[in-house]
Length: 294
Image 1 (cartoon, rainbow, N blue to C red):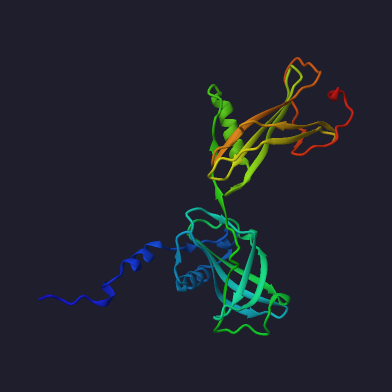
Image 2 (image 1 turned 45 degrees about the vertical axis):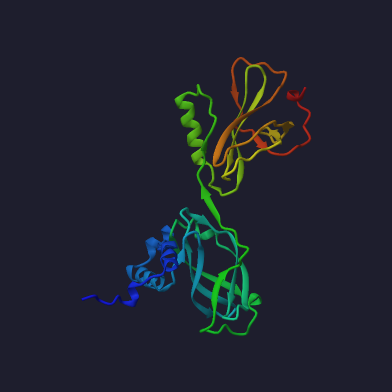
C-alpha cells in the first residue's frame, strides 16, 4: 500500500534554502552578568530567546521583548543577535520603534559599546532607554510595535591580521617580540587601517629610527602616498618633523607590515640608544630649536 505523504513532509526548494540560511543563536552574557545572575534568571532569558523568530546567516538583528513607560524615559528590553561568523562590536547605533504601518514612533542613537564584543551566533540581552523627547507619540501601543536598526547602520566586525614581508633573516626572538606587539594592539575592525609606534631609537650613525607597524583590516590591499611624522621628546619638545613620500607602498588585505623611518642628525654615538619616553605623532609641527636639528 502506498501511503500518502503528509503535508509537513513536502518542502519547496526555496523553503529548504531559507532554512539553510537560518542560524541558531545562543545566549551570550557579559562576564559580570554571567557571574551575578541566578540560574532562574538565565532560564528566563533562554526562554525569551527561544520565542524569537530565527535570523539569517550574515544578519545582525535586534528584537524587542517589552516596552515600558518609566516616567522620564521609555524602557525597552531587547536582544541583539549576531548572525555573522565573526564577533561584532556596536557603538553609535540608531534604533527606531515602529508600528505595523512602518511609522516611526521613537528614534534615538545609542552607544552600545558597553555591550562589548558579541560573539558569532551570540545573542546579548540589553535594556535601552529612549528619552521622551525622542518619542513621537503619547503612548506606544503594546500590541503594535517593534524595534529595529536604522538601515544605515554599519556593523563593525573584528578581523585578524598577520605579518607579511618580514625580513628573511629575522631572528626567532625578534619575530616573537613583533608577534607579541601585534597581539597587544587594540582590536582592528573591518576596513580600518591603523598605524602604531613600535619603537623610537638613535643609532650610532646619528639616525633616529622610528619603527611603525601598519595594519590593514580591509580584505583588499591599501596604500599610502605619504605619511607625516613628528618626534616629541620626553620634555614635550618637537625635535623632528618630516613628510615622508612613499612609492609603490601598500599593505596587503588583512595584513600587517613593519616599516622604519629615519631622521638624520649630526650626532654620533658609541652604541644604539632607545628613546622610550619619546612620542610619535602623525602630523607636521614646528620644530623647536635644539641641537638635534642642526
